[in-house]
Image (cartoon, rainbow, N blue to C red):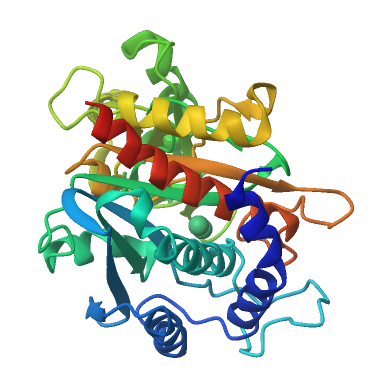
Amino acid sequence: MDDISVLVDELYEEIVDLRRDFHTYPELGFQEFRTSEKVEAYLQTLGLETSRVATTGVVATLSGDDDHGPVLLMRADMDALPVEEDTGLPFSSAHKGVMHACGHDGHMAMMLTAAKILSGKTDRFKGKIKFVFQPNEEIAGAQIMINQGVLENPNVDAAMGVHLWSPIPTGRIGIRSGAVTASMDVFKVRINGKGGHTGYPDSAIDPVVCAAQIITQAQTIQTRFISPMKPIALMFGRVSGGSKGNIIPESVELEGTIRYLYSTSPGEKDYPTDAFKKMVNSVCATYGCSADISIDHENDAVVNDLHMTSIAYDTASGLVGKNMVVEHQSMACEDFAAFGEHVPAVFAFIGTASNEARSTYPHHNSRFTIDESSLAIGVKYLVSAALSYFIDRDAH
Ligand SMILES: [Zn+2]
Ligand SMILES: [Zn+2]
């Protein structure tokens, strides 16, 4: 075992204590007041100066003994979710209706410990590490930190982030280049027809049959309009309309999400939301209906930089073995994407599923928990990947 593994194993109890404390006192996005005070206090005990960005966000920069070199940003997210915890764990949430159901409690514990270890290794890197504790990941908090200057002073050259991930077993790490989380557009469509009597359908304009056609036809957008090699999930989560079985309603509302695992934008040939709008309008025209469509673009895909990915991949293989590094992509969204749009970045998934730890529930589930032994793997990965980044930069 190298010295980093020894240090992490010595600190294991502290990592677990940190995680459990964050877990007991979860706070929603931009309300991470207790959380940010605890993060600040911890970083200050390491001799680091802290500053606030985006109200509850905390930033601290660690300089190498020789600080002439690149600046690496390392990010941990801080927010919990509006979920009532049902894990029965002794350190369950003390805040009713709020829960760390995504693992961000573990991310903070890992990053604080990584900061502690790296603080004792300033002779091992030339440059600076900017630790960023980010609020409100679940609703795009990263962009607000960027707007408030988190990538400047000192200017950031590259970024790293991780997520504890229950779809992957403990001991494995998910890494690949390219898109690893989805871009997402949220749509609301109102299909307007003309209400009437179900005994006289020809004298009405039926928005129900039109909606049914849209729901099924939209599934052909991938393959017929966009390459089958480009993953898309076009899902309807809400369908509503009508008041009674014998009345044709005036309108039907459809709501859903379009997720796609690649980068594109409106107007480009492979932008699925343009194809969706076109299809809604043409199906409506067939049935004599009209459509009001509103689209919100909520997230961009996290796109891992090829070179940063190779650093991360080599680090992870050294840590858990080549056969335990898996290619992983997810249709979930992650606002770390915002950092990757400005600097080369890599985002890795630290496997945390174990039957023994009962940590196989999906993220955001009221029974979600992590396998705490994966916290040690996460810290080893963060410390080693950071040092590898500087060694790699030194060699170039
Ligand atoms: Zn989440
Ligand atoms: Zn998350």
